[in-house]
Image 1: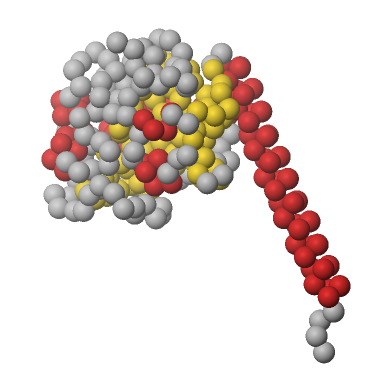
Image 2 (image 1 turned 90 degrees about the horizontal axis):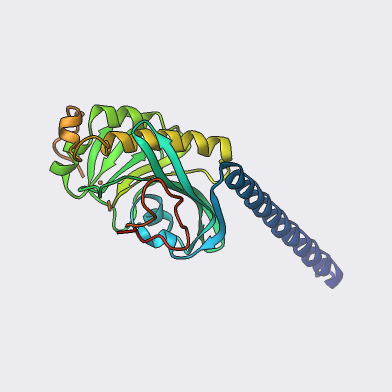
Length: 253
């Protein structure tokens, strides 16, 4: 005896209601994150825009390369003080196929990094098609770069120690163009993002000290990195000391 048609109808109706409920929950969560991020930006005197499709196109490495990014949403742009002075910053959610896999925090340096470097937690399945070559372990993370010799000059023990302080919810931190970036879990709230901003500001001060030419080799001796291994690599935002513009990320002359 077959299953009556009305049972299939009930099953379909229950599935539809469950799907609508999940969709409503996702939208409520996104709306809550949007409002929370907006309030945080207002309290800091920073700028907020709901979406910017061009912003993530500045970068190709780290979480951007791993997850992809159709757009940046819930974007906060401003500037923050570090030990070496004020630096422009961006905070935004990566949107990929309608999902938010991570929040990206970016702190701008004054000079373009000579070597793009990625620092991944070993627990993260970081492989992707255009992954830079792995240099080996540095503290709690693995370093990746296509220029091994150049990267070893940048990766000082001070940088390794600072990267270790980022936390287990930060899957990757990376240097690309004139930025220091990191991705954190999408549930990270303003207080966690504030701490991450401070930590990235410290890294920016290490790799881009204001009072000398960019030369990490003379800032401190390089950290031990295996000589053989298998590890990546976009510009923009107003000059330091002024709020960054999420809708126009190109740097001022």
